[in-house]
Image (tube, rainbow, N blue to C red; front, top):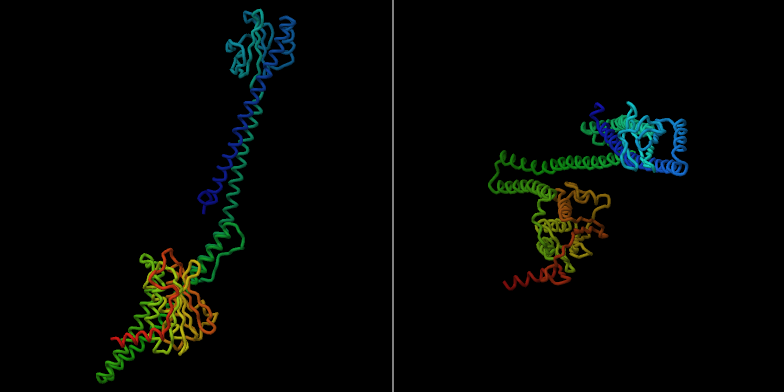
Amino acid sequence: MPFPRSSAFRLALGYIAVSITVLALFAAPLWYAWRQNVEEVRAELLREDVESLSDIFQNQGPEVLTAVIAARVKNEHIAYSIILFTDAKLSPLAGNLSAWPSEAPDTPGVHKLTITDGERPIRALLMRSTLPGGYNLLVGRDNSRFRPLEALFLYGLVGAVGILTLAGVVGGLLIRRALLSEVNRIRQTTCAIVGGDFARRLPARGGSDELDLLAQTVNRMLDQIEQLVHGVRNVSNAIAHDLRTPLAELRSRLEELSVARPDAATTFAQIEAAVADVDRVIEIFNALLRLAEIDTGARRSGFVPIDVVALASDVAEFYQPVAELRGVNLAFESDGAPAVAGDPLLLSQAISNLIDNALKYGVREDTIAIAARRSDSVVEITVSDHGPGIPDAEKEKVTERFYRGDASRGTPGVGLGLSLVAAVARLHGGRLELTDNRPGLRAALILTATASPANPGLPEGRRWTLPKVKAREQRRAAVA
């Protein structure tokens, strides 16, 4: 990349512009103070000189003043001092000017003007004084005396600008060299990543400079991208694996029906089994579609205040017949937890998945505890069982899609239940916590409570167990 088109060149130009601006801001008041101070000092010296010569005139007469001025002219150079003593007709009596200048002021006081002595113009600070008897005294200082000093000041400014420009160009070249070195390393790493080496990372020294912080941020992004790529790859493999079994069974049944052509009863039985295989495939795709919809956050638009106590109680009651068939008791308990803002369908499905897992892996003739409690500003919905539980090493993995632990190998399912629960929790700004129930598993769906109160129709500390519900159903059947 040519230097004039590089970022380093723009940085160098910015540095030069800022430096020159700062230098100008520093030099301008200094120059103004210098001019003002010098002129004030020179005017004060002129006044003192005129007063001294006027005293000589008044005390000793014009002859002595003429002699004093003549002696001074002999010792001073005209380039630095201007003095002229004339009579009432402006005829020179003493001084270093050949005639009274036409540009001289008509009034007493200090004046800054240009006079002509012969053919040479002189820029001077003059003071005219009218003496008794019509005599005139003109005293001044040639401004050219300070021109070398002013020129030296200007040369210093020009030199400083040159040095700053040179430093900016050299600094830009050095910065460009350093930046190009870093950019080339980043480019090599990114080219390797584009080529498929997802393990490559940008070089980072662990410092706090800008490029190092950028490298660390990009590396964290690359870690996330690598995790997502591997996740997509694993999901694809898992989908292919989980679809292969029902599709193979479906093909086998259809092929058997095509070849054997059995009787009608057997044919309908095989058709029902084929429908069940298709349902398993559809279930996988429906679960994936729900997860995709949850991940996009599209369901947030349908959030409403939800009474989690009533919702969890209804879901638990829905599973009572299944629990009764498996010889498991369901115990529900609440403390009047406040409402939460969310999607009732997704939350009910998440709670259903937790209860379904507890029923799958729980112990027969045992109790599954379901609770809805409040804690500070959160609502916690827990489902606890006494089954085999989940090892600590697998607790973070079980929420990955299609992951199935050793304890779930022989049970039906595709490994999307806890993934769906975790996704629903994230959508509602909460989380899923899996802890040991000693023995068993305690799954907690933690959600943020809203300011809306819980349903006032629900009693505080609502509690029921399966036997009570069973007795209630029996009474209903008797009445019917």
